[in-house]
Length: 462
Image (tube, rainbow, N blue to C red):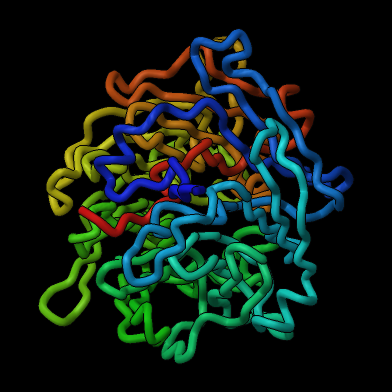
């Protein structure tokens, strides 16, 4: 008799996930800004006992050029154990990898191999015609399928929204929304899965972002500044929360991992009033959703000689909070300040009163702070995408934001690097610093950890 067991990397609760073995591999999406060479999935050894620790041990080139890999995710995760839509026998095996510029989606198999193997391509026409969307951006695995946000429309600039894929056949099922209400701009999304609530954020349509920040749109307060709340089961928009149009680009959403909770954090890239960045907490107040600013990060004065053209008139560097990540135990929040070149650690055990615990500088528009492993190398870029291990002990950061935006804010070159932080001491691991030629001229963007990480799982049991 064959006994079918769930994938061992599925965990009923956040506590179980935090007790799991540490990851031994990291998968990194890296892209060629010139679009002359294929983008790649780069595989790094994260086992400190390994002789190849911190080195590239696997590499898979994509079959085309011009994809610009951005955010990607697993085909299945711990939400497969949810009791109302159980799929316990799927595996966390495939990486779903969208090309943000090409609108092409790739499916890669990671089982029993170091370098992922391509098993399926969803062409732009198939994705666009079945969903009405283009520019797939963020992937989340839900209990009944794969959700993929998209920034643009197929035959128009917008609206963007969410598409649904089958998470075993990877067929494009169609558009997720039945009633989008007031939502037009799209970016990230996630959910309070036990409460049937989906939350989405706003960036801009393709014309607003693909050639860099448009100053007139930013100063005109035309980028996103709202959160949207949805009935997850009915696929219906139920409420929007406007943060205020001065708070441009609420990007990454990080809901509490504890499925009994109904709060989460969102990072806001910039305030047009003073170039500051901020982090907000959303929460349910009775039958309504509210949002409150809980972290303010000011801009830093700088000489115009140190600034790119877009910032010279302001004489300051905006923090540009472009990513945040919440540890699986909901105790620590990590905030990337890509502009100033800083990653901050906060105690958020009380989500309404975060306490800053530490800060690390790397890169930055004006500072160009080096990594201690190579103290003479002035770094371009800054901590951008951040990923936290399941047990909360390790934090990984990569340095590229988005090709056109890299070039605007770091016109002399953003370079290529990735760093690892010990979360307890909040210090850099000097043994882990892949950079430069390690990435063969590609720019690293997002990281996924073997077996899951803090931003790729939803849990249905407390």
